[in-house]
Length: 324
Picture 1 (cartoon, rainbow, N blue to C red):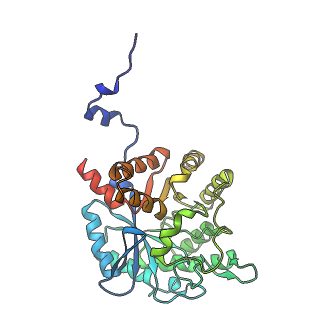
Picture 2 (cartoon, rainbow, N blue to C red):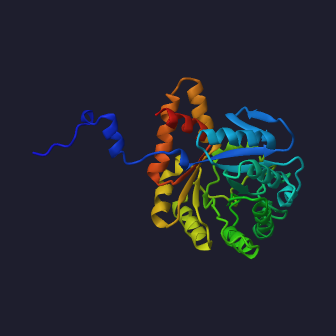
Picture 3 (cartoon, rainbow, N blue to C red):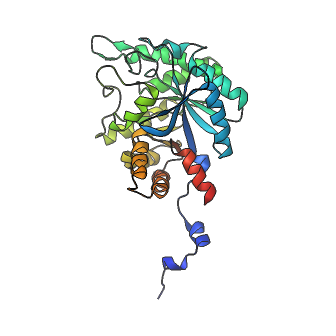
């Protein structure tokens, strides 16, 4: 009678050969938060190991990332001055545009993704222009300035645009705007299925983007809605997205798999700040084997169907992979 291999018969090399899911340093995009000034590298208390950096420090950080084999970053900007429409995000001399140009000048081989949104740039902390009557974001008015923001990023040298504001129709607007401006080949990574989640708290500390009133549930997704989540990603694929995303990652791996099976595009997950902070806290207090749990978490993303992982753990994972 045939007997399948007992696990004890699989030595380390054979286990590697038959492993179904693997994690590589090339899978990762690392988030960087930039602000004006010089010599600034301020650690965020709720996210140990994550910093607000001036552009000169971000350039140094890119050098360190490359030593680890990490060549992809996503940039978030923190302006000195915020206003009701996020004017800094529309300016060719704003913090993001300056950061893109400076990083690409020193590190032309770094793949620079830009977060396209207004929450970091507005004085009210919401993701676009406010409809004062309904006290929520005016979707169509925000679409108009989102196209302008995309052109600013493209002119500065961004390698990919990632709109996170979840405005209805934003992918079509950005694709049209970029194509008209001559950036037909600039890819768009859509935050296609982004939930109104409680996992974002620490991010709002580092990005200084906590809403001054209400929340974002009117333009982000209800965590209970599975079919709507799939439909949102399918819609963005039809509008011209090049990569789809599920955010947050851990609590929504079922949808990562379902969207992966329902669409033809590469799939990204955003391993968000709350997920990162929980593991950091548990590791610091010796509640878990930190390295093991981090790697197990990354494997779960890949197993569910993710091709790309945006994660604050990326540097740590790269070091783990170097040791393995």
